[in-house]
Amino acid sequence: MSKVVYEGWMVRYGRRKIGRSYIHMRYFVLETRLLAYYKRKPQDNVVPIKTLPIDGNCRVEDRGLKTHHGHMVYVLSVYNKKDKYNRVTMAAFNIQEALIWKEKIESIIDQHQESQGTNGNKYISFEYKSDMDNGRNASSSDRESQFSAAEDEEDSHPNLLRRTTIGRGPPESVFDWTKEIDSDLANQNGSNQAFSRKYWRLLQCQNGLRIFEELLDGDLLPKSCSRAMKAVGVVEASCEDIFELVMSMDATRFEWDCSFQYGSLVEEVDGHTAILYHRLQLDWFPTLVWPRDLCYVRYWRRNDDGSYVVLFRSREHENCGLQPGFVRAHVESGGFNISPLKPLNGRPRTQVQHLMQIDLKGWGVGYVSSFQQHCLFQILNSVAGFRLSRSKTEYLECKFNDVRLEDEVVVKLESQVVCKRDSFKYLGSVIQGNGEIDEDVSHRIGAGWMKWKLASGVLCDRKVPPKLKGKFYRVVVRPAMLYGAECWPVKNSHIQKMKVAEMRMLRWMCGLTRGDRVRNETIREKVGVTPVECKMREVRLSWFGHVKRRGMDALVRRCERLALDGFRWGRVGRRSTGVR
Image 1 (tube, rainbow, N blue to C red):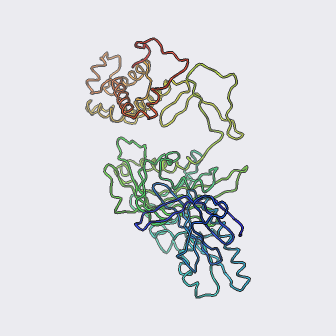
Image 2 (image 1 turned 180 degrees about the vertical axis):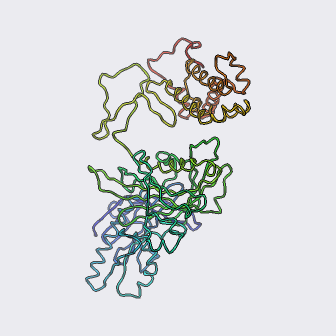
Image 3 (image 1 turned 90 degrees about the vertical axis):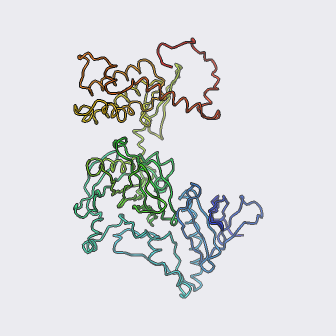
């Protein structure tokens, strides 16, 4: 019986005759001369479902990334060169496990290659060199495109060539900005020079990132396209972890990419190339500027040095037409370059470069110069979402009663003590440890004043009719003040703060002060704005209706059936400190 080299649960990936893919969990066992998989973990003399003999003629082909019902799997195909129809296709939900299996199988093939080489059947290997790489090791994807015809000629040569393929090369329309362009080639071709990434200027350092702008003559840029910009940062994580986050298009992307709103797969070209649809979440006057979306081709590869390259560029697709209410932006060049660094204090480190050259289209680009730069900074700052600063990490302890612990709790992240906060901001709302909303109300009033000041050119213009000012106020300022108000346990003091802030804004809009002795009702009727307390009651009742329409098994409805031990309800009646 041969020795077991590696074993574990993997995914059996395949396609049915009707074209639909399927995945099944199977237990794979790799021995020195055999690869087999079972339905369950083998015990005693269990017959495997399928086996594949391993020798020097075997190949390991990386099929790349496949999507099955929203789940991403990394597919490997093991086959014999002499019998390509006899193959085993296996997959993993994370790329680390797929790489481990790939290395283990290749080591077994290398052992058979050495043993057969001593018997006169020699295997040779090649070394890929290119003048355009400037010292970087070529990826296996490039080898596939350079030597695609070599495998077809292996049968006619006594010296066999064993290689591992990782997909195909990038599409012709996608520019690989991670490779330096030779200056001679750039001078010969003016279009290539427009995308050269040789000279960069440091713009600023923000959120632990260095943001660079390309130094390039504006005449060489495509029409209405911005200069290329990139953000460079160091993240305490492995390349594989960062790569999986970059490739995800589900709800987990919100955790680090603040410019992501929605994404979907349009077409899967192969395991390394796909057409994606992407909606951008940009906070530059969202009530006035139409949102942007993208349709682009994405290509990825893994280099021999362990780095990952993700490239994308916009393109049109018949199944991804223009969406109503969205402006289709254009990405000229962009992507991620994820490179490993030396570990620090036993923790892995990775350098992440995020480049973007985009044309956001629309009126904002032509008339407001800060629009495109602000949105581009927001997209590049997504790299900061990968970073975890132990010294800046804080926690909040919720205390909804007066019970105090004798010993103060100390929270640590490894050896770093995590500081305690009484409140913190989450998704635009301020959460306090004692359950109050005083800070959140003050924060929303401040956010409303910021919007009011940004729009003061319209709100304080005497030539603008008061009714139009009121409409502008209801669209721009009031939503910022009432963000999250549907869940507020408000008191009379909170409503009074909101009323005072709103009336001050309305008076200044009309060019009045309290010294003019004009009643509040007159000012509201002049601009056509209802009292803020009425809108607060309206949004709370709307949220109450949403909760009541949920099923009884929903989490928000289970709270109605909670039995609290030792808790007594107060005196029945209307509270003087709150509003029901």
